[in-house]
Image 1 (cartoon, rainbow, N blue to C red):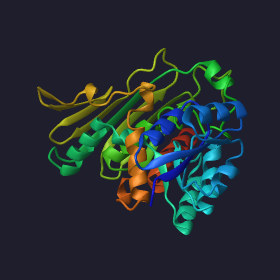
Image 2: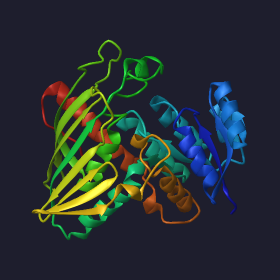
Image 3: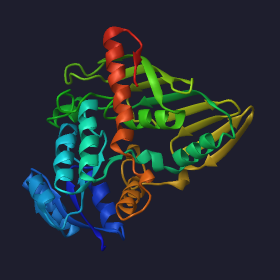
Length: 339
């Protein structure tokens, strides 16, 4: 088989990360781009030397397309992915995989039914510090995980929401700071910590209530399947996009991931295991640095490699289950079981 033919649906800001990775890969070629805004579609096609469409259905009917990347507003992810796999295409979806657990479950069913992969862009799992932390935890060398902490203190303006047309609404964004800005952190916490079984949480709209119906702040107590306990806090009410902080306390050491670094603390001894220079990015720092790695691993699996490197719909669904639990806990005041 030659290079995989790829279509990118959605020509917003994140699509350039995908298009650059596709054109740089030896495993793929960019066949076409799609956007309902013809000007944006034309501009992207001219930049990358490919065809363009304004209707995504034209792209998934294109015989030269083997893989579809979905970089559209959240509410379109599930329907577009399902149409694509029904047309015989493999699909890579930007986060979140969908805006509800039920949508994600349908995507997983359709993926299996049609024998096509649907992967999810949780690219921060492939960051050097994340990979090293996972390796150490899974090896058991620092003992069992006892606690996990995740902190996200960012900011978004009223204009960010009002200019988009789809952000800030449950029907189209699926939520606020939880499903958009901090879903990567929740994913890393549950992936590194061993999976979440229950939550006790609250959400609020503290600052942007005149512009959005979704939450701009959330905090949660997380109960992990292995008995560990976690705390999580996220807000869009700060004045800067501070580096995300994740801490994993184990029996024999503590791992701290922050701003592209990984530090291991054992008593008074602090060891830098991964330095920031291990992964620079030409894009917005908070997008992460590993889209290209995730995309390459996805293509390798399609071409006969190991599918375990794909972050599947089922994997992507775990963070959605946590978010759903956080909303339910906030509205009822109860501890909510996740699985």
